[in-house]
Image (spheres, rainbow, N blue to C red):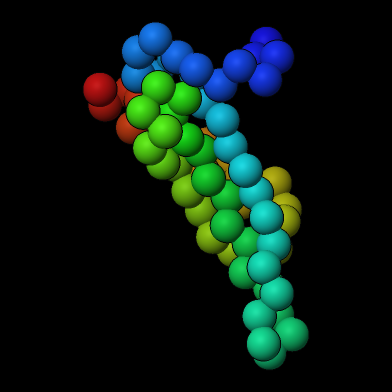
Amino acid sequence: MFQRDFTATWPGRGYMGDITCLPLENGEFLCPATVLDCFSRKAVGWSIADHLRTGLVADALRMAASISIAR
């Protein structure tokens, strides 16, 4: 468990993420989900949708996993 320690000694050792929902002028929403590598703080996965359903986060995690495997 992280216990709020978001550091890592090498890339791919730990990830952190965030989702949010941003209101647009037309009354709709833009919802980005991101996954960051705790070592480099670089985005390793992301997804954007108009909803906060599970698929939004799953897509970002899938991208992060595929990048992690490619290393």
